Image (cartoon, rainbow over all chains, first blue to last red; front, side, top):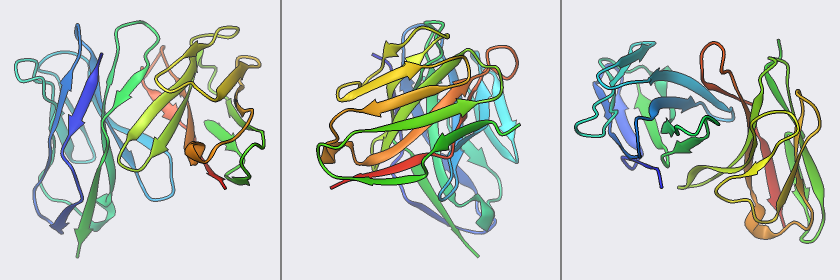
Length: 113
Length: 113
């Protein structure tokens, strides 16, 4: 079945540091790929998405590129802020038409001033 | 628009008790989902409803039942709660006509003693 693997956390960075959170996937066909963010005590919010190979999703300074050849969708940000501290989930959407999501285990990001 | 709402926010149950988690969305979405979130496990799909009147099992359906009461509401029932069902439960709905992404509720934190 489909699966998503993302790097273990927590990732601890100083403000203005560069962020990479790795995500790789296994799926049949051509899934859509997502990054969701969960702030403390809240539900998940869509951060960005890509629906086909070589698409780049971007939002709030975060970027991720759909790499079919390496089955990856790594999340990057050039300069993190304290307010970016959260848990980040990589996910894929199956091709069944029901749009169920398969999530990675999540990566906690802690940014210190 | 309130988006996706869930009640209650927090609940404590004793083993063997039953309860129903409520979810409603006001975005006119056809598809709705229930997930559970456990530490180090990411989110796992319990049940989903592709449209009013239909429900299907996800990855971890055992011990749960669901009802798609109407297009707006999708409830999750625990008939006889077990400590293994201690988790945070998230409801989501899917926008197939616009953003093509899932929107999540704020979650219900359930503790089974």
